[in-house]
Each structure stands twice: as C-alpha cells, then as structure tokens.
Image (cartoon, rainbow, N blue to C red; front, side, top):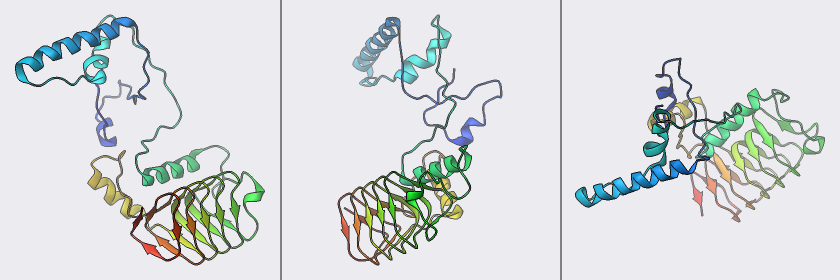
Length: 241
C-alpha cells in the first residue's frame, strides 16, 4: 500500500497498471486493536519528543493506515463508483459542474430542462448551466457555464456567464454578470498550482454569495461578492466584503 498526500493527476499515471488508485474519502471503521496501535505510536512519539524535541504529531494515514496491509488485519474499502472531485475553489466547482453536465445521462447538450417554469421561448440557457429550484428568469435572459442556486431572480435581458450565483440572489434587468475564464486561463492556473486537482484561480469568474442584490444595469466582471450585499454600480476585479 502506497499512501500519497494530495497527489496530482500526473503523479497517478506513474503507478503500474496492476495497482488500483483509490481516493481516500476520510471515513473509517476500526477494530479496537487499531486504536491500541495508535496509542502505541503516540507513546513512541512522546519518547522521541523527549529526546529530540520533535515528533508530537501523529498521522492516522501515514502512521497507521499505510501499515495495515503488512500486518494481520483485514483491510476493506467501500468503492464508490460515481464522481469524485476536489472542490476547494469556486473555479473547481464550475469545472466539476461542466464535467457532470457533459457526462450525466438524461442531460442534453444545452441545459437541464427540469421545469418549464424556469424558461420560455425568449430565454437562452446555454451549455453547462445548472438551474436550482424556484428560480425566476425574465425575458431575454441568457445563461451559460453557470451554477444558479435556489430562489434566484434574474431580471429581463440580463446575461450570466462563467459565474456561481448563490441562493436568494436578485439580479435586476439589463445586468451583465461575467467571468472571463477560458481554456488558456485554466491551463495557466494549473501550471502555477502544481496540482491539477487544486486550482487556485479566482480572478476569472464571478461569485455572488447568498442574498446579494444587483441593481438594474450593473456590470459585474471577474469579482466575488460576499453575502447580503447590494451592488448599485459596476465592479471589476474586486472582492466585496
């Protein structure tokens, strides 16, 4: 058993094909013997600390789990066959949404048409758009590559792209909510993050947190707005706290 903390996608391909590469979900069930082993490690670490001044940290994964297959313990895992995605940043959530919408059965190429109440002939729901419950969308609205939470209101003729809109957000008419992410910006971010699973970039999308109100005609570009804020003027590359 080889344990690696937060491996990159490039690291996983180094394994020989005879191995299964599993992701640890962090849920464990132990016999009491494993706990006794943990106490033994703690005792050894305490003695080490008295000599060297170090060794007070105990890692369940590195000190216990990695050695179980080499001992007499049975070692079983529950293998979840569905999606797993490392959601640490808003951008990673958008990318996961895009991947899910492309690969899920029953989704069409344009959008998930769960309820005709969401849309009408004068509304455009583009690719990779996920719409929550009880959402009200005005005439002339266009939404693409976005996650729209529950109870959101989007006014007539507004445009939402590359954005995460949290629950109970109100967007007035003629607004433009726009992030600028594209393949180039994503690839550049991956190169600088040193891990394809831990994308840090937050400067190329829009996040409107819960209960944000955007006034008529406001342009929000590549910005993050914390909950319960009112926007009455254009903002670009800002974090509104």
